[in-house]
Length: 167
Image (cartoon, rainbow, N blue to C red; front, side):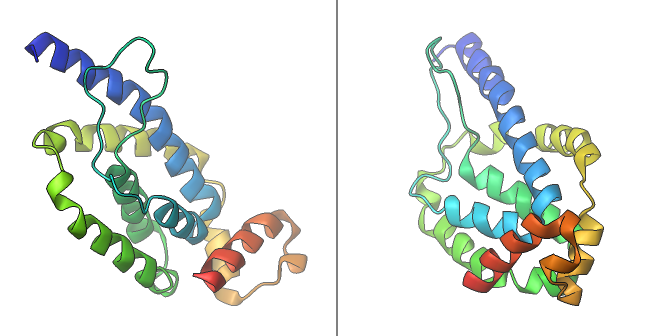
C-alpha cells in the first residue's frame, strides 16, 4: 500500500471515528454506568481491533475499533464515576479485558499508530459540553432513589437499574 493511500485511509477512518466516539462519550455522560455496561456487552465480538484499510467511496460508515470504544468509555468511567459505581462494573470490565487478551493476535501492527490519544482527547473535550447532569445521576444511583422520586432522571435510572441489576 502506498504511503499516500495509507494516509488517506487513516484520515477517512478518523473522520468517521470522531462521530461515533462523540456519541459514545455523550452516551456515557447521559447514562453513566449503564452505558459502560451496555457498551461492553455490545462490544464483546470476535474482532475488537478491526480497522478498515483500502477505504472505498462506497464505505459509508467506518466504525472505530471496538477496543478503542471500550477504552474511551472505561477511561471516562474511571475519571467521572464514584468508586461505589465503578465497583458495580468490575465484572463486565474483567470479562471484556479477557476478551481482548484472547484476541490480541488479531491486533494489526499499525493499530497503536492509528488509535491515537489526540483523537480521543479532542472527542472528549468537545463532548464534555453535553454532560447531562452525570453527577446528579450518580448521586441518585448511590442513594437508591426510585425513579418516581426523580422524574427528570426516570429513564436514566431505569436503564441503570436494568443494566446494573442484570449484569
